[in-house]
Length: 343
Image (cartoon, rainbow, N blue to C red; front, side):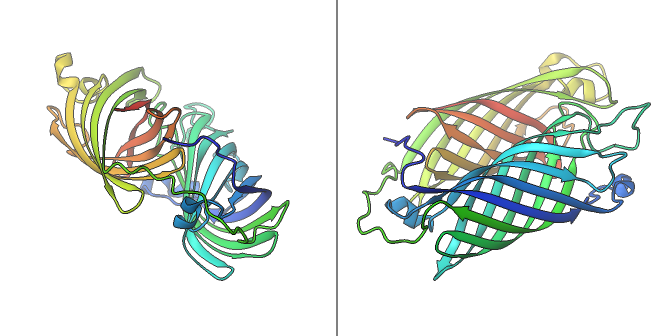
């Protein structure tokens, strides 16, 4: 049984994080987009888990929050600016005294003011739509005080629409950032009694997932094509909370016969794949990263290997909402939006 008292056992505060970086040209055709430093700032609210529950201790007292983000890419005439909202999670690898070091991940949506336009903005070959997904992954070294904390972060941010609208090379920005959090009460660990362990005791879990999406293929400005998939997965618990997940994907992707030259029937749009992944549940959220290989891939438009990175949010004891990105190595294929049911 899962508890939905997300904010119980937390200390609330506000956060500020100024960042500096640059647009990293991950394709030779993107060299012209790096014109100056990228400047960014996050402002938001944060909740620090207070150590009153045993799962807080197991995860080294993580924290989560919500940020509003502003980014100037350093090439305003072509790339413009980004305005976004994200949720974030800090998972310390370890704590020693008042110091901690761990991973910080955030995900959300962003509005990019300048997108590709054949007449007005042809130099922007990275972003094809105003609305994009925004993801940041990094590491954070932090010093905590009685009611505030300060830290140094190294991270990589990515903007992409998951091939919903082309071009979609995406923007990658490595960052160096400072993190400041101020809390409205002490964040010291002075709890005398821990609540009972809240981890699931089941070694095996299995479930089903339905996914729907849409994508565009080159040339730009063309039609959009639907994608649907059904996944059956089995999980085995390793350690106290994490799981190894094996799954089988049945995929129907309308864009395949359009992307590959030739006169093919729609049955060539079917793909069958199998993947192995790692799942880390943190309260209601589950982070998943996986690598798979097609078993049936008649036209092989993007290769035989594929990857998944995303999360599932538990809505009820058995039902979860899924948002993830499916890619072939560094090239996004499409976003996966759907529902997951755990039997």
